[in-house]
Image (tube, rainbow, N blue to C red):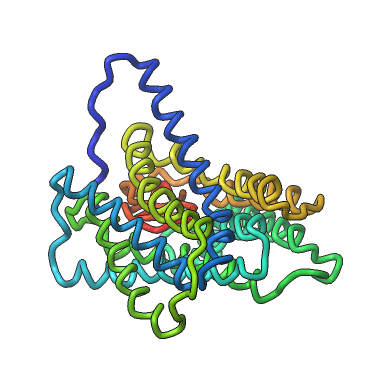
Length: 345
């Protein structure tokens, strides 16, 4: 994929610096609150319905942006085939897994599980599924991150009180992000399409995938509550659509390395939001373990090679949404996702 177009010059360097910082903070807040929106959304809708609504409203925002910028959609059957796979791995699958996970686990735990994505990426590199060569420092980061995960889950207590299924689904969602990012880097680089068109196309394809699946496993709700509906709209329009546009601007202005740091704020914000607004219980091991996970994740992202990093790409949430090297939607966040194609949180 081609790198993002350079931003237009700003008359005042100071205002420019403030501008990207404000957008960076907004991006962290939006992706951090995505897990709260998922939790609230599932109180009124089935998980697949939450995911479909998220993707639908995200697609609308990105489609409007493509029309306004008069951007062109990607061309070629092969490109669209790869985008279809990317849409499943980076959007349809992880978004659905997080929605199902939050039926039984708190949003704080889901946000922390999302932060394990770089650890999964490191695991994949160890089994030669990634072009990144593991180093001692990165391997140490994997070990530290694993200890952090065990701390969050309370392994010394025998995982007492932990919903194993919900936690496994959240961790599987993060694993899907890692697989998706590697897939995108290998298949969608050098297409000549813009970050925006790739992101919009990917999210649109994921919407079509959920449009097929959702009616098969759910029925229309008998009533629609306003709060869950607003949560789904915010999750899609802000967390999937607008957040990707913010990410694109930040990456173009300050580069993928700085933009990728947003990932480390997401679990902090998700935890604070869950405790303050949803009255979720927080024990000492959750924040301590989260910090250890983030430290390990940061170490897995260190680079000793002199190779030029791949161009930035667009994902929700992910992240999600930071170790991405191609423009796709992120996540959930989801996150996790300043250097990859359309995914996140």
